[in-house]
Image 1 (cartoon, chains in turn purple, orange):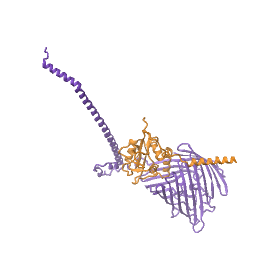
Image 2 (cartoon, chains in turn yellow, blue):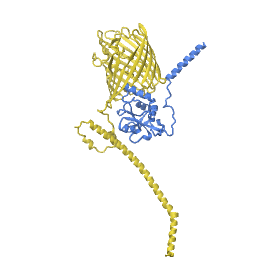
Image 3 (cartoon, one colour):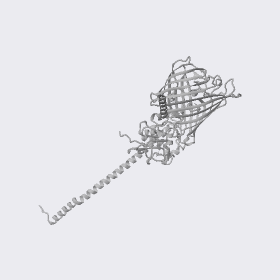
Image 4 (cartoon, one colour):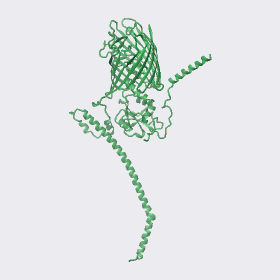
Length: 448
Length: 179
């Protein structure tokens, strides 16, 4: 056994001293360095993770973009004829900038032959109606079944049509044709619209003439209307109406730069209403015009920003009628309107005059008319009131059956759901030389 | 005499009440000062990066969101993107921009399409990511996103000269429910 000598003891002491120093001074220093290094490492890791996440997000976005692009190209490849060679310019194109990439990614509106472009909505109504007129009976009546079809053909073109199935005989200026309970089909609207800008739109086909307000605001759907039916002034041609409600032709419309005034114009040219005998022929000249002269209509209206829902305007319509056994008759229709339509309140006011001037005679036949309609919504209920008036001379050459008609209507509309409305309406109509008519109607109108 | 005066008073009151009901418009929700909750975010109106428009006034924005304007100044057709019914972002747009409730908004577009005045109905998308992607891809698109959902793929418009980060910006959306 060997014992340590003095040198060994000194060294051992030195080592012991060093060990104490390490414990008391160096170890905390080393520990501090280690901890700091770990923290720094941790910070670097956090930064790296955030950067990775960002990169990942960007990569995911890029993948989404590329997937969309691949789908687009696949669709284009399927749509394109097989024989067409691929464009070499595309394959050899240099790397695109961000803006170019974005333009590439823009979804072009093109026809996809694998799916229909049609959108369809239906409207209908059923009415229980009775009145005090002699020979009239109380009856349930199927109203118009309207298939409203639209299609976005392209960015600038749109198609719109209303195909209406309706029962009962036609009534054209008091003359009836057709069977009482048979149904017929009418293409009430068929329009191809071109929208160049907010300032110019062009529509061709069969549309509602922009006379006054009601005719273009409400078409063949009672569900949209507050009341059970249209005012007599705007009744359809085949339901005894006096106006050329429909026109086959072309219509330009758009905004007029006018700031907060919100001026709009509508300019129309079309076939006008049929005027030759027999009068019970289709009143809308869908295919053939009975003369070369065309009907013109110009409407201007304002929707000022200051009063939300207000629309004020006027229109002027001009046509030349050629009834059999009569001289040609110049027809002018001047209409003016002021309406305030909000979601809970509406107030419609329209006045117009139909002026018939047979050529070769100084005589002019003026038929003035107006209506006012007011309604206010209370929850699901909307009580309404309408007063209407039309006064045609008894010798009026085009519509001798109309005469004087005036009277109030009261009603209540109840919105049973967002798409079903039930209306109860009472009408009192005073007639010239005939007893007044009292009528009551209960109607359910709906959209589907 | 007293009875007649009473009747006249009742009649006058009735007429006044009806007139007030009919013509007195409901207080405009957008005009009322709304205290902004601390956790509320601003709602940005976003367009495609290629759209040259930088700023819109509130009436212009309203016309666009109601389909009364169909084209941008550069000729591109406006494609309106709405989020699904019930989303807080959509509710803010209906309340503060369109000033309508859900039913009135739907009826407005249904009627507009029916008359032909509204050229295209709004596209409805379910998620902010969907809105962002759609607006990124369609040059004429306009939609809306929370500021926290914004990124560099879309452009946030200034409304009445105020950006979504500016003080006094008018569109605020409540926080998302933490489900």
